[in-house]
Image 1 (cartoon, rainbow, N blue to C red):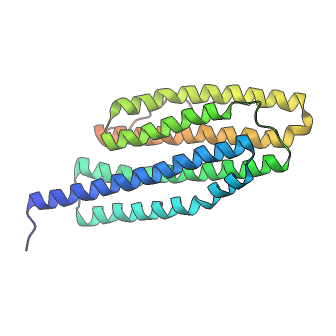
Image 2 (cartoon, helix red, strand yellow):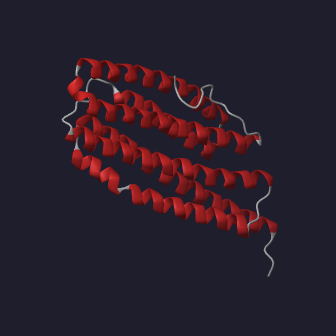
Image 3 (cartoon, rainbow, N blue to C red):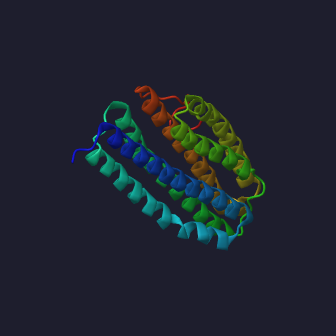
Length: 230
């Protein structure tokens, strides 16, 4: 029995909805890991840091699950043009989401190292920078779900805010190194942590640019910055 075009289309739409649900689930878990890793760093809570580290496998499992779903869609539904871009964008996005989870784990590990060095984190406002990066990441995922180019532009514009905060916190860390040389090792780890937060914002921009391609069929760099903040 040959499926009617309308039935096949409905089956494809149902698969896309499931794919979007899985993407949001993976993304929300990664976003939560970022929030918890930053909390662990700011409070030097080793138990919370370890809980983030243990969640890495969950993100990896969802990465493989979504990739398998995308490959199945490509093989069985043979989507064309715009539909193909939807599936292809999802496959690209999971790489960025998985990397955000990895960066959250790296920040959690830094919390353990700073705590071991008897370091201090309260002299810089990491939560402010992390909140901005997380908002960008969340909006990038929403842009995919809603095919929303306004959200795409907002994500790319907010990247400059994260870069400015990065430069501000970096200067404060360097100043603390000069004033408290006994903290130089802990501060070195802290500097790496804010770099990881900045990279989370970069992955949000990656997702936004891929959504722009999905909607318009044109792939271009939307962020105004270079590869690394000055």
